[in-house]
Image (cartoon, rainbow, N blue to C red; front, side, top):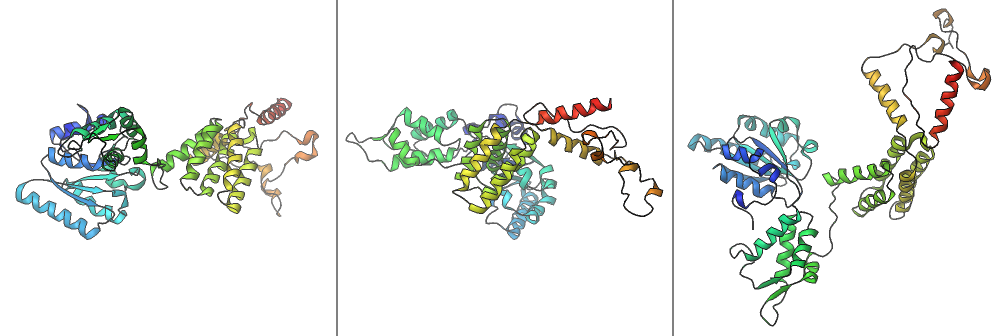
Amino acid sequence: MRPKRLEEFCGQRHILGPGKLLERAIRTGRLSSIILYGPPGTGKTTLAGIVAAETRALFKALNAVTSNVAELRRAIDTAKEAYRANGRKTILFVDEIHRFNKAQQDVLMPDVEKGNPILIGATTHNPFFSIISPLLSRSIVLELKALSEDDVLGLLKRALVDTDRGLGSWPVQCTEEAMLFLAKICDGDARKALNSLEIAVTSTEKNSDGKIFVDLSVAQDAIQKKSVVYDRDEDEHYDTASAFIKSMRGSDPDAAIYYLAKMIYAGEDPRFIARRVVICASEDVGNADPQALVLAVAALHAAEFIGLPEARITLAQAVTYIACAPKSNAAYIAINEALEDVASGKILPVPDPLKDASYRGAEQLGHKGYKYAHNFEGHYVDQAYLSEKRTYYRPTDQGAEKKLKEYLEALQKKTS
């Protein structure tokens, strides 16, 4: 059922709709190298073939998993010879291009820059993490989205009536409910949906009327358990971890627990999870509840000590506590602002009274005048600790941090 013409291609209207970037490039023949990035089953390989056909370019496909530098060089040399012979450029399609190491990607650079071959790389990985910067800067990065349920439903219906490439010659009766289920359960992956439909049809016996009847139960049996879309080297890993942290920060324990469960189920390293929890305890809870960091660090140590599956309980305790704790990022903002000042050259000299006075001759250098806070009432004395007034830490009114704010405000009143 692989589309052969652009008008057959399903979805991706954000890049292929009338007037959109790729549609314009194909129509005008002004094609540069492209990195197609998106989840499985969204049409990356198909689109590369269609682009070659529409632009009348020669097409050479490689898979980065099985290809080496020698094969890559041969493909480039063949593209050069073809251009000299008949003036036709070659589209070099590299599937799973993220599997090429830096040296292999470097091989492509000189000829890609000259425009022949025209590279179309396909990857499920975020190219900004996996493709070298010089190659990215010479390519258009286009993200393909997971297909909508309506898109997949249209593909399934097309497959049922297509007698050349599909199941049109089979006596199939498929319920709308079964079709909708397959369209939804495939997570926007056309390949998964079509494979499941094929299994459902070819594994079902004809009924007394000579028909192959596919209902919801047959469709569910064909696709079996829905796999968790998660790969520790791919975007879903980073997206899930991001959602996990943002759910704790957003005080949603249910969402945080869901993403925790997803990561555990997918086989994520519990230490990776625990480190995220520790970071969140300081960055997003901070002094609003200092106990959050204590609990997070304890969870990290416990996860390392006992491992999964039992560590899921400890992690769940820490995650729900942090999600429910009062939030403050005042400490996080304070260190970032101070680091920015230091990095930008706003360096302040240490006031003389604070300099080391423990060695002979220090007093002659002016290292004197320090007031020992514990010798004064309330263990506080008005003293300049910076050579100019700067404010970085601004306590909030959240949780325990409110007491710190009140204490600092009381000290300020003493000195005003």
